[in-house]
Length: 196
Image (cartoon, rainbow, N blue to C red):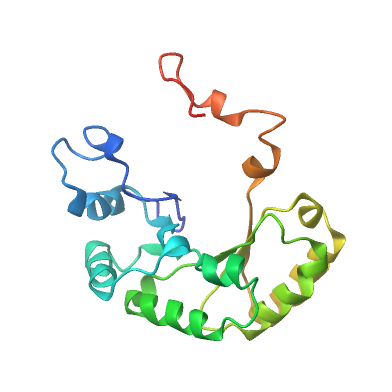
């Protein structure tokens, strides 16, 4: 059962290896989210990064979780990677309309910036964030090392926070530093081969 006042979750709910461990033995795929929501109260929804879910899928998701649950979806890559946060009004409206039926269960929405999104592109990020509707909270996942350690990024975060209110910055350090240190080795048992 989730802890009151805290949000704890994983980057997805569909791990088949959780059946018999986190989920009861025999749990079917269609019941994964409901079982997941019995343990966690939030999830990072990477699925929207790759494709928008069908309306009936969104309705099924909403029916599977309590009102206190939070879905934290990523903006589609068509917005962040293909359009580089510009000229994407139609895609943004479609994304927000598609997840709107989730209502109060919508948590922070994340923009995953491509690794090529460096300090020179910060004006695009600011313009994009300035134009977002104030109905949600937003986060930014930084993948570029120069941007991550940029003083311009910190100044932008201060300005945008004053415009949009509280929001989060998710820093994906594993993607930035895995060539120097393999963090996965700390979480893999000796009898489990590491992913390559």
